[in-house]
Length: 177
Image (cartoon, rainbow, N blue to C red):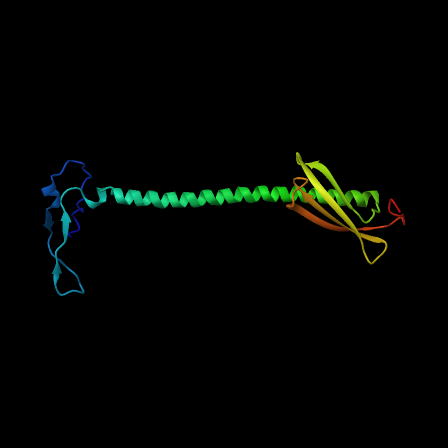
């Protein structure tokens, strides 16, 4: 193409084209490739240029299907993230309940009897049920205390479990002995 000629650009026209006119093709001058020994004709459809054509219905439907699948996966991931967040919050609050029970014994310097005690407390605006199982150890001045925390009194589902050890600093005897 000579240097002084600008390339031809076809405007996007939405005029109505007859079917026979749209299907006709014209042949441009032959193009010779450097690697080929023969010439190939270049053809194009008469009517709107390729750059002005829209999407077909099938392309739009496929794009919508891909988008729907991707959005469904995103929604499922978000729902799982919310469920995990709620579960972690419950576990943290239940662990705080257990830690508070163990800290109360340490601060009072209690020496509880080897027994199982049930109770309830409120934390985080919710009621929690705890169970303390105190047992003896081979060392007579140390007691093992296992604290489990549940959402309901009769539930088998434990939200948190904490094991701690209490030392008899004052040499007191447990209550009831």
